[in-house]
Length: 198
View 1 (spheres, one colour):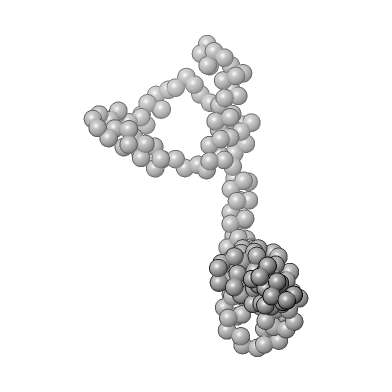
View 2: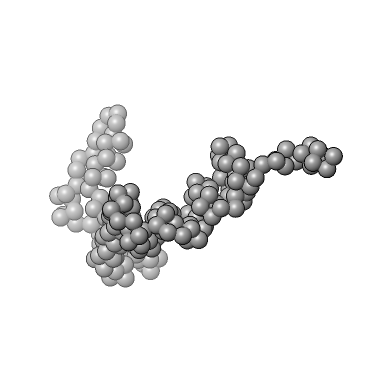
């Protein structure tokens, strides 16, 4: 009678934790499946599929052997922690030589790390090459040299689109540099309300 009432109240009464977790995985309820499982490998897989990469990496760390290190490395790779991923791929490869998936994923982690390093160096270079807004001066008077470079106004339909396209092709600055220049120009206007006219 107790078993009958238990199964009537809880339809999952006869299923093990892993069976409940697998059913939830099939329904793509990965967060719930991670809570249902008891096996760390299955918990980690559910967390990984749910996008909880940091949690998955920690769970996979509890799985012994090359498989645990490999899966933890995959989770760190997806989380953007390339150095941790590379170290764990090395660990997995030390336990299981010539594991093609680990070798390939390690190469991906190295490539992503290197690309991020190059991007950071480019940003630093751009920041050092950027001009100082405190040293920018604007000539609001105009002059003959400026008039030589001016183009004749466009006429007809498409004038705005063509003008915008021409302007955008000539822009040789980053948004950060543009904002620095804009703020410096605004500051010079605030300091000289007459607009430079004397």
